[in-house]
Length: 277
Picture (spheres, one colour):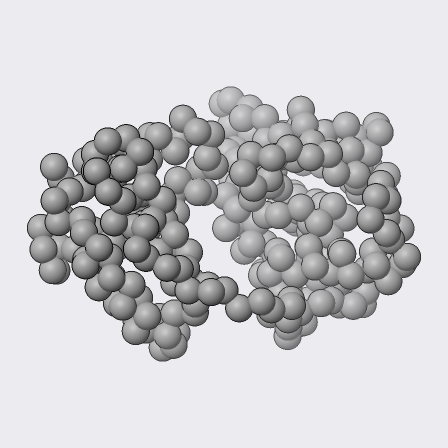
């Protein structure tokens, strides 16, 4: 049986489980890379999906050079191999294989690292104010940055946030995170008012034929991709003149750090706004 056909079935299976489009897209990409590798070694069929070919692929990744001229990090290798192991587990559980060849593959241990970049309030203010609210795009980008810092949600969670999941009167948003786990996150009154203005004045300019219901829309009136959210942060960081390597996750860690510095404790429902703006 051709592996490419089984991959299509696996991706449909992930969709029935409610996995995010980003997760499915990543799985498709990594499995295609694996198939390309197999084609260089042996026909990519189910019979040839063995422990040996998986070991060879693991060694290939260990010595693979990235586009930046460096070896792949252990974290990246682990993520890529994790996709393959999940696929082989699916094949065994659905009786395509008697034994799971992926069981023999041990993922490289991820180094435990603290976040490298934490923004101070001055840097944060410069980045957020780099979004020009005099334009529709700038106002939308300002909303993206403000929510990322104010709530510490992930870029994928922001991209998937619908207006129906928001209670701007009470100041709470309903977020679906990793593993489809739901949680309620508080949002400051100031940012709630900013979002309200965006919904009334700016968001309608992005709508096309049908309203998809998502808060943040791209130029085609569709849900913004998580990578596009990341690009907004990178663009505003560049415009601000800040030289640090800032990402969406930087906003998440910065929010947590500022909370702790301002006396936050576990169980507190709302944090103090630490910037005078």
